[in-house]
Each structure stands twice: as structure tokens, then as C-alpha cells.
Length: 254
Image 1 (cartoon, rainbow, N blue to C red):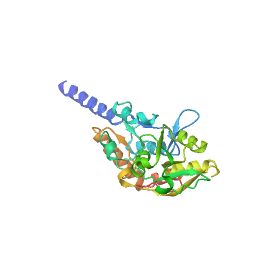
Image 2 (cartoon, rainbow, N blue to C red):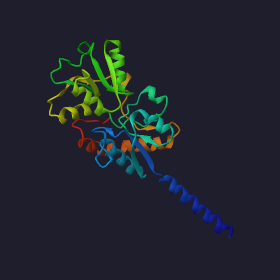
Image 3 (cartoon, rainbow, N blue to C red):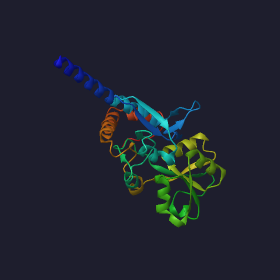
Image 4 (tube, rainbow, N blue to C red):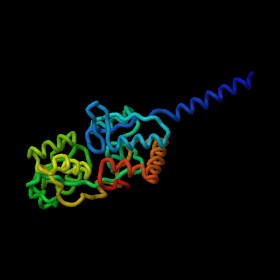
């Protein structure tokens, strides 16, 4: 009888371990940063990072749910355990790394300046001096403007990329800085009749870090390891490249 009880206990322990291994991962994205993440008319989030999140979860053999979270509350929400991970085009930076952990980078996306079609701005610091430049709040893009232009330009921040674009088109700002893919999406969206890409890709390793990673709580080392392994797998077997090709016309491979 004692042996039977022990055997049952072992089976229960294995079963509970199996349940733990298959525990759902909740992943937050902004849902307002196309083509990486956006909200569809039915309220569901979609985009490159949503497709990638599902591919990563498939590799990890874990059920996942992707939820929308406004950008300015996305790190506090992770720390408050509202969800387990962030996939929201978040660059890995020393400042953010003080608060949260990161997976290995899953993509690298250069930034670009965008200006009205008739603007003389060419993306150079000289052409941006004295201008009002828009960027999404609490992003590496806003920090780039602060670092390289400081008091020589006026920085105006926005809660969403769509509101940033609306003010650029309305002439309330002189230029905007955003990811190259989003900038390209804006230009394609209106056929290049109102806004244009200006200058070269904006690169600064000190500001933008090594790339974009999955944001995680520092104590979740096991989950980080799982994401790292899954990211390596989707890069090596070409899954990441195939997903990216649906949304952007350039390589995002880190």
C-alpha cells in the first residue's frame, strides 16, 4: 500500500510539473505601432510582433495570449505582473535594463526622420535646428533628439504613433522620428503625397542599444532562457525572415 501511495504521489508530481511547463505566457504589445503591432477593427492585436510571438510560443511549446497595453504603462504593467513579457518594438537600452531584463535581440530596425513633402529638412542636425520634432514618448527616438539636438530644437512627444503622424500631416510639427518600418508605412500609406523619408537611417548604438528584445522581469531567468532558445530557432530556420517579409521590405534579422 505504501508503495502504491508513493507511486500515485510521484504521478501527481509529474502531472503538476507538466502543467507548470505548459503554463500560459501573457505577452503585452502596444497595439498602436504598425506594422509591428496594431489593433484590428475587431479589437484583436495583430502585426509582425504578434505573429512572431505566436511562432516563439510554438517553439517553446507554451500556450500564449497577446494583450494590448498602452506604451507609457507597459513596463509598470510587467513589474506589476499583469503579464509575463513585452514584445512592443522595445529597444534594449541601459536605462530600461535597470528596471527589467531582456531576451537576446529578436530584431534590429533603424530609425528615420520624416518630414512634409515640401519641407527643406534633409535629416541633418543643421536642417533640424530651430524646428519642432515629434517622437513617441519614453522612446529611444525621443532620447536621440534630446541627445543630438538638445536645446537647439523643440521636442514634442506623443502617446501613439498615429497621433504623431496626425500632427506631422497637420503641420503642427516640422518633422518626426520613428522606426524605419513605421516611417516607410506612413509614406506608402498616402502615396508619398504629404510626407517623405529624409536623410539616412538614424544609428546610435549608445541610444538604440543592440536591438529590440523581449522585455521580462529580471527574476524570470527560466523564461528568458526559453525565449532566447526560441529566438535563435526562428532566426536559424528562416521563420523570422518569412514573418518579416509579410510586413516590411528590409531585413530585421539581428
